[in-house]
Image (cartoon, rainbow, N blue to C red):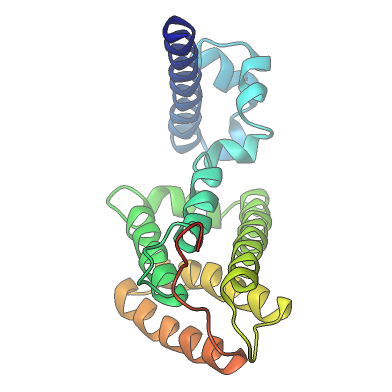
Length: 210
């Protein structure tokens, strides 16, 4: 059993390393030559993998630019489902969105942002990605409301989807602000007020089994 587990772990590490190599190679080529000038075959050749291997890891050329797409989505969901019992919903989302903004505004991010902003295909992909993130986050919030809500007013599905959309949009707005942290403080004060107005508020996370 241990040997089989170790073998599975090695395969997963190798798979992750190949994926990262492809993404890093693609991004370097896109920045060097221009996004439109580079094709999937160019990326595969430079990364020394088959074209089918590229598509095994990334569904499209656009996905190569947003290689942390799934990780970001999971982090937003975990901000709801994995927060401490004493932490309420909106502060947890504020904390995670701030961390994501800091990641995406770090040194060296400006050329990537420019590439995305000047490519209609990448802008459209990013918009679709944000909507998907918002829907996943809304589902997590709605599930939390269903579990923790007590007698009295409850947040509707529409309220959950709205707050999720606000949180995801807060990321984009703060990323473009001169002072991202100050922008997030302002935005999340409004989100908190909207969430409080929409219902009784989500209670602190309830430990499993309670």
